[in-house]
Amino acid sequence: MSTPKMMPKTMFQKIWDRHVVLERDDGQILLYVDRHLCHDGSRQGMSKLKAAGHKVRKPAQTYATPDHYRPTNAKTIDDFQDDQMRGIVEELAENAEIFGFHHFGLDSDKQGIVHVVGPEQGITLPGLLMCCGDSHTATHGALGAFAFGIGASEVAHVLATQTIWQRKPKAMRVSVEGTLGFGVSGKDVVLAIIGQIGTAGATGHAVEYAGSVMRDMDMEGRLTVCNMTIEAGGRTGMVAPDEKTFAYCEGREFAPKGDRWDHAVADWRTLPSDEDAVFDTDVTVDGNAIAPMITWGTSPENVVPVTGVVPDPADEPDLNRRKIHEGALTYMGLTPGMRMTDLSVDKVFIGSCTNGRIEDLRAAAAVAKDRRAVVSTLVVAGSVPVKRQAEAEGLDKIFTAAGMEWGEPSCSMCVGMNGDIIQPGQRSASTSNRNFMGRQGEGGRTHLVGPAMAAAAAVTGTFADVRDLMAKK
Ligand code: SF4
Image (tube, rainbow, N blue to C red; front, side, top):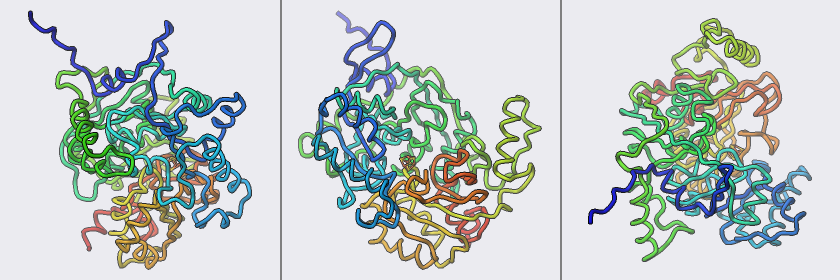
């Protein structure tokens, strides 16, 4: 008797199928959550849990770290000047005490931004389903996990039940083919993708990033690309696990060890999409054509190469979009045709869950070395291990010798909840992921760039093509 042929599956479908608990008639599906990541902003969900009188269902699978509210100059809780921020960070520690989940507090050598901590500690692993009450949870998909952001009520539901109701997204493949040029980073790749498909381009989809550029990319770059999936509207972003992924995971604190490691790797090798798997949407991006990118407007899709100019809204055929572009230019204080390299910068931020990892700091330090920042620059490692590694390599010395500030691990100027903001009308070069109006302070003008490009802006005072600066070294 012949064996029936199995339907080819995408990686997303394989991971999804492993986590289905039950299906409702209305199409909602209950999924099992392997790891729940929490941070100081998860307090609303925890309050709802308490109000309902529930316990945390699986404290051993729940991991929390304060990140949004840690001031970058606070080494300990005693250094907090703001009572509200201190209260929020203390509340997370208290909740960890009450519910018994993992907590990497300010005194922990594991503390950091939740999306940096997960992969770094081996909490994030291929094939897992992960949730976090934060929009940029897709970051973890870089390791081949299915990870997505949830709201406060859903945080309470996951805490209480270790499950989550979801509608199944469609599957999308974004293949970045070719070879990246000199000075082009993962941040440039994801900005180029969003520039091509738009902020709604992946709406309703689970995105798998594929192609030679993604295969060649290091894990830090993949984390950066997956991090910004939400900026294209995607539910999640993922990259097929490979030898680089396994090498990255091996030996990390919460990763399996010994025989369990061997079994896990054997299983992870089955995760990549089958060769003939069909995606609902397929997009190809030319990696050879990607240059260092920079946003000009108030949406991540408003992006041009650093060699480009501010686009003219008159060229936009869609009247609604034209109006939005005009509004963005007014807010950003720009006129069509201005060269991006003519724009002066008031503040530079290097950090966040998008670009606060060691490779990012190395890239920024390579540009800053033996140069001086001519504008105020804040460099913030994404976690304590990143900070320590950077200090062991002398990167902090490079930054401080260049006149840059070296802060304690936190989200910092990505969102400004810890007080790190820019003033109305100020222009920032920022390695974070959102350039929305007011994201870094009311009236602030944010331009998204990669870490080397941010360092180039710091030492020149304008946006600059980092390839020129790197070539001079
Ligand atoms: S660094 Fe920014 S995007 Fe990332 S978790 Fe913090 S606030 Fe959210």
